[in-house]
Length: 376
Ligand SMILES: O=C(O)CCC(=O)C(=O)O
Image 1: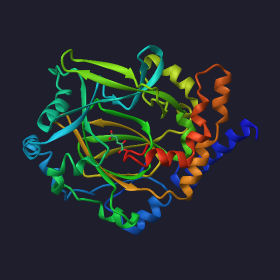
Image 2 (image 1 turned 60 degrees about the horizontal axis):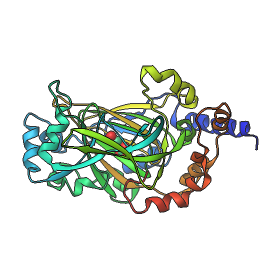
Image 3 (image 1 turned 135 degrees about the vertical axis):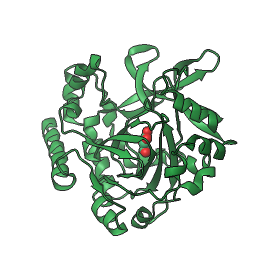
Image 4 (image 1 turned 120 degrees about the vertical axis):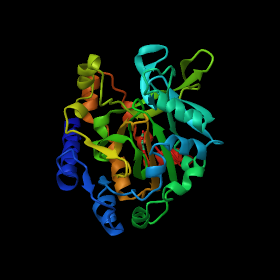
């Protein structure tokens, strides 16, 4: 089939999904309170459509005990003997694209330095990034996507519900993982997707999400980047970034939706499908609210802190159905997108391995992900 025809067909699909199912505005539907399991399944899970549920968790003790004056004392006391995993980066961008150590003109996929430290120290580091007198040479983000709430943070388990009852009933299973996220205004999570139905509850501060449906996959220019790892030296207070050896390549979204003004024009011309296409769905999730983030939706996350300089959230990852929608999305993702080839022919940086059918193949992806919880 002519490349230009594929391009038009895929664009038509994107348009139809918005017109028929998601709506043509960039707003995420908001519900006043928890939906019935039937409504949640029928109106949101089945059509793979996000929503925000207000007044969803106001009864959780965490909403008061972790946040009111003395919240620090409560958390530090409950976790005084606990060691937690904290992701350290120079600038708050973990699992993100940064210049390759040996060549600033190419990019690599950098993972954070993970430091295990007593929880009270972690809390202090996270909060101190916000203060003007901060001399901490890193940005700390307490997060681990391995059901950490049930391991590292089990002392807090009675402060929230073990699952979201209406979601559990609709989805027919208990969550496979519950993860806690404690970050500050500098912590950012770059565009990616997960193979989970995600119920994302904010306890303190605000989270700002950009969301794109799986049918917009080509707008994010997924390419393969060499994996790299930050390591932080307590002695020098400096980070080193090294490419993994042997080299490993990670398929990752190329688009930074908030490019610095110095490179904005360049980014827009490199990624026109994103910057010139329909705006992503955009929402802010506040304390007491839950975002339903459907499986395979691409998401980018920023945060605004509470008065103590922190954003706290907990998310419930439920198994997704590897059903006909999953098969369709994989087929779509494996289609080499014509415009990408046009860019390549114009001499623009395009790596067609991103569309390598074998890499995007459902079986390969499932195999690769079956051993870990963070199925990305
Ligand atoms: O809160 C964040 O920084 C990222 C959340 C996320 O990516 C997820 O819940 O899958």
